[in-house]
Amino acid sequence: MIETRDGPDRGRAPCDAPRLFSLNYFRLLLVLLVAGFGLSANAETARADLKLCNATSSRIGVAIGYQDPKGWATEGWWNIASQTCETLLKGKLGSRFYYVHAIDYDRGGEWGGTNMMCTADKVFTIRGVDNCLPRGFKRTGFFEVDTQNSTDWTIRLTDPGDSGGKAR
Image 1: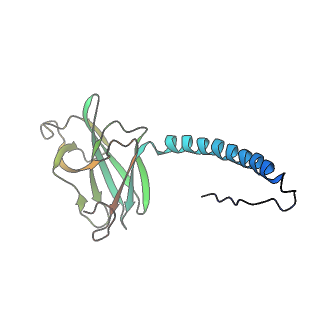
Image 2 (image 1 turned 90 degrees about the horizontal axis):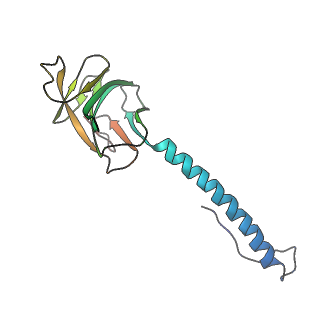
Image 3 (image 1 turned 180 degrees about the vertical axis):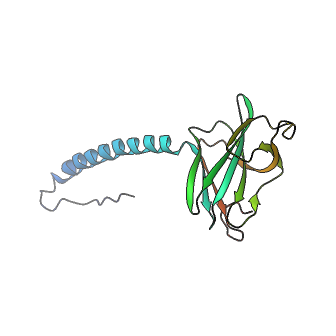
């Protein structure tokens, strides 16, 4: 927030004060507008991603599912250290809904849901969510994330009992 104070310029005659204040005010406003446009353009570029923050005390593995113009896809595994964030997809989000499955490497347990998709034990990108087992993949439950058509979104996973994120 920027505060301005109206009042006469103490070192100048009262008739000069409004003119000098207006010129200085105009210069300040111009600088702030230029700086503001630059910051907002950079913020839009930097924020157009799907990110996941691990707010737990454990290392986690994360897989995601989504639908793009080619159909359904799942990808994994991102290994995310405790109390850190990772960009899962870079750029403007193309879907409203994304799906997440995560595993707690240190204490066991997982974050999952009822949306069944294909995964593998090692790093993977899998096209399609049907017939996982016959194709040699696991069938895994993912929870849904509604990004509300935002161009960027951050998911926060928390320890059980913590508030403010998706708990196991």
